[in-house]
Length: 305
Image: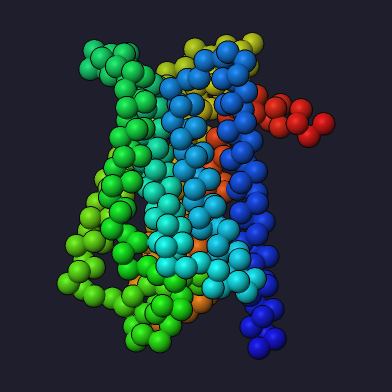
């Protein structure tokens, strides 16, 4: 019993700093955009997308990280059935918006750095005007599609003695029913697969465009020019790293999720591992995005003083 308690404390000490660091990182980024807005500055189209990504990250961290941390420290029955459904639903919405906005960010950046050719000219002109609508559509689709997700989730004590119920740490889920679960899985997975495909296409396109640009300027670069990359190139590299981080964590999360879904009684280590991986992207993404915007670091430094 003592060994189990110490193990839970160790898990809690992993989730707690991960959640706190993620919340502080996203808050710093959001604070930067609020300061720009309050001082009359103009946000770029990419900033509008990132702002919604930060909000989605907050949803994921608060609805996944906080309950996971509380469960690890021994508070495993603090949510009733409605609370479980709401927490899992909001986490799914936040996760879906994270996928959608990351996809939108990568596609928009491809359009921004694309060569000045006729086929890209119209997209370059129209894309900034449709960013707000695209983000709103992303939220709307995630809110509607994920409505079916909380159906199988309830409080832990509701399914404690029912055969086939799955312990998710702070909530429970009913047993697997192939006839009803398969359509749900397909419906919930289709937007993710579509966004992943678009992100991979956008990433490969950005790599090709950057490579061609580097080849063109290599032979005309003068020795007195600074070797420092342009802001546009740094932003593109930052988005590429962001997409790589997301795809890696998403694939790992899917693999662990499969291991949780197959057995009737999943191992608590797998459940905690899945929770840790799910929180990696919302924790790391603000720091990746801040790396290409020194104004955010100056703002954070001013607040610390």
